[in-house]
Length: 309
Image 1: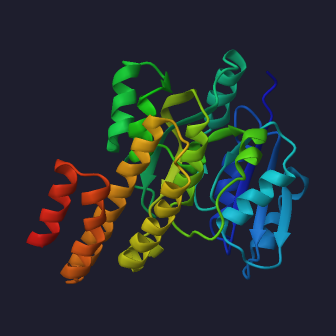
Image 2: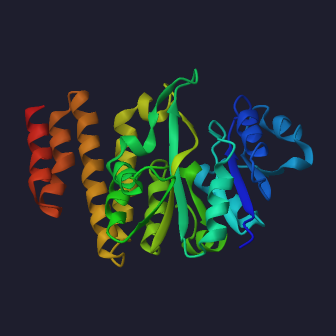
């Protein structure tokens, strides 16, 4: 298969970090078919930064800010490659990110999508950890790989992946047609929109390729919305997961179980955020639905944690 990657970079007031993101894509050992910068109505110098790259990128300007999901979807609609990869404007790729996936796709045409490991770094560039090592599903894949750089995820392994996935948007490689058939990222959600898409993608997949090497860097911001207002962020997370739960009735059983567990964890995180603000009654109400929707020791433990504060 001739793998032609369209790399989509949504950008909103990203003048400070966009050059690093773009340079990391232009430096790929497997060149991107095209790089699309989707400017979501930036008010800073983002247009000028993009213009400086000339014909090396495609610049798409949206005149009304509609959010990152709409920007990514617009890029996918305009893309001409047969595979899509995504990168946020404040993150970056390692040089072999596209090659590691393109070579595998060319060898195994039965892979429905691909993902991989990545690094967490702070604003100074200091390494904070890696995604696969910090998630149970990632550790399971590392164990299965037994030191190999590649491992296939399939069947019941998707349950843990949906419940608490490793990898992220910038490690995802997906066929453009599959992305469009899914309808892209859901609109109207500010948190967890990536999980919503990924779960719907998993629900229609049999085999996913996992590269057990870092494909990029995700920058942890101290002033992110999640850290500025944890309660609001976790409430939005639960709202997105509630919608995902509603549309999961025809998903494979393992994926359904993963969605229910993800919802339990989402409610627990909301409970923690409320409890830390001294809102213990609200914290208890946040986790109680899991007790009757997903009865078991885990849900009982969630309730007891909130009762004990």
